[in-house]
Amino acid sequence: MTMTQLIEVRANGLSGTDAFVSQVSVSVGETVEQFAVLAGIELGKAAVEVTAPEAARVAQVLVAVNDSVQEGDLLLVLERIASEAPTTRVPTPSTEPKPPALQAAAPNSAIQDFHASPWIRGLARERGLDLTRIVGTGPRGRILEEDLAQPRGPATALTTARPAEVRPLSLLQRAVGRTVTQTWTQVPHVTQFDETDITELEAFRVALNREQDKNAIKFTLLPFVVKAVASALSAFPEFNASLVGDDLVLKQSIHIGFAVDTADGLRVPVVQHADRLGLRQIAQEIAGLAEKARASKLVAADVQGGSFTISNLGGVGGTAFTPIINAPELSILGLSKATLKPVWNGSAFVPRLMLPLSLSYDHRVINGVAGARFVAHLASVLSELRRALL
Ligand code: CAO
Image (cartoon, rainbow, N blue to C red):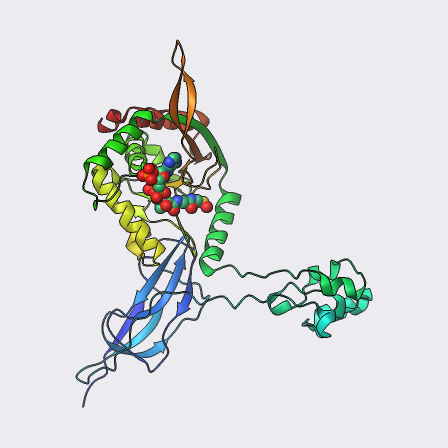
């Protein structure tokens, strides 16, 4: 007689408080091979996959899409496959369920049909509205309460109106949306703007790229900024901290996150121990993590433990912006596009490459003087990179 051995699959490594199940990829009775994706979890600004620790049969699925989960929660129970050969299941990539295909709402008067809940039908009756004349902007053309405010014109006008396109937010966008709303409403932000002269740094960067093998990872601006931020965080430890209740928790390690724009939304992988890494290692880390982020392959360890975040919009443009802090961190640096500007050197205007810096910080902990000093330090390290060695 063979004993059934059960394996509990629990949520672990969840750093965010706002974690929920974005996907359940298996059902009871299925056999899965080792590392097959069992479920997806969205936490704050990142997504992680829950995978099978070994080949097994799914005995119980204890969560459903959109369930909130916390560290240690039991997600699934697997049954160990002992001697029998498992029917293998090809691991599925961690894709979130696709939003329903976009449905353009057809003008109802054209099709003499409409989708509306009994509540909306009642409201329309009360207001004397003809629902066949209303263009629904909900999913599949469903008429929503706000649609009842549409100007009422002749049916012919509505049949020619361009219908609205309804585009559901991805799960990642929804998760990030909740997080940034919470942070923006609960954390008093101040943004300190500055700019720094990176003419020499840029010449150094271009020279480094020219010297190295064509297949080597290219040095972009970001690794230099990560290096400079690591130096500034060492000099200003209260920026490498988080607020827990009324306690400031000063972190011993410097882990720097950076925002990556992906097809699914914003992700923030973290360069661990950035202060201990050389420039080339930082460049390699950034390139590797950005690639993983774009391929939806980040795992919990790639997105955890950040103490500071950089958001670089320099590739897009703009002169300044207010980045939202990646709580529970206390500050975030935004970079806009470096441009050549005429700068007075005491006797003449000379063209210098100026990088705009936007530092948002939590004003409950960091006061204006500290914010300005931090940015000034950062600016001086970037304009004179030798200072990062100090
Ligand atoms: N000013 C001027 N040039 C800049 C720059 C800046 N601020 N930042 C980067 N560059 C340059 C790089 O040096 C590189 O130059 P070369 O082509 O001459 O080598 C070029 O622009 C391309 O850089 P990159 O964008 O590919 O690489 P990166 O390391 O600077 O950034 C990454 C990587 C992942 C941060 C970026 O691709 C990205 O996704 N940015 C978007 C971040 C984002 O979404 N922020 C918003 C968050 S809040 O919604």
